[in-house]
Length: 228
Image 1 (cartoon, rainbow, N blue to C red):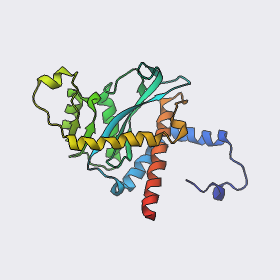
Image 2 (cartoon, one colour; image 1 turned 135 degrees about the vertical axis):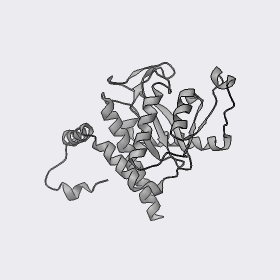
Image 3 (cartoon, rainbow, N blue to C red; image 1 turned 30 degrees about the horizontal axis):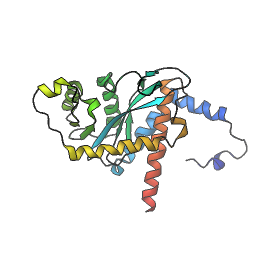
Image 4 (cartoon, helix red, strand yellow; image 1 turned 90 degrees about the vertical axis):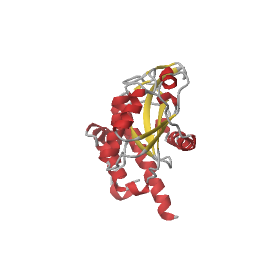
């Protein structure tokens, strides 16, 4: 966090002024650039022995873009796809989607967004292992991973007749156990109260808040490790 007293000694800060600058940085893409720069500078702090893919629904109270009724949650939500490393460090977030859609909705475009964020940070995708639950079991996602030379370790969906009827697909149960770290990461993200419920109407603003939380949490972990 910035030492605010060293920079603002004569005037008091207001939430309007803070939000104005936050919003300007949303518009020019600064939050995405900051996160990519942090990832690029601290790649050595990541554990890329495997990546974890997951989706997360957030309740929405003010309406706006990419919001829809989610029957399981019994409320309007927005759904975001995340990638995390093997330590639970968040790596990337795709553009939020309406809550009524399942995790595979528009997967080609959204997974490409996740991969591009890592590529921009100088992270080579070739040969990386990817864990994902049965909700991501699809020929389309497996094909995308194969094209990018990512080793997909996706749990088989028993309701997916395609998975059951075609050629054998290897699934490593021991490797899949690593996926729990992204569940923990999503829980840790909830410590940022602004992320528990989405009040932002624009998807760009909501995505910027997520990337800001990624940045703060990752920098805190780096600082803690440097002290130990």
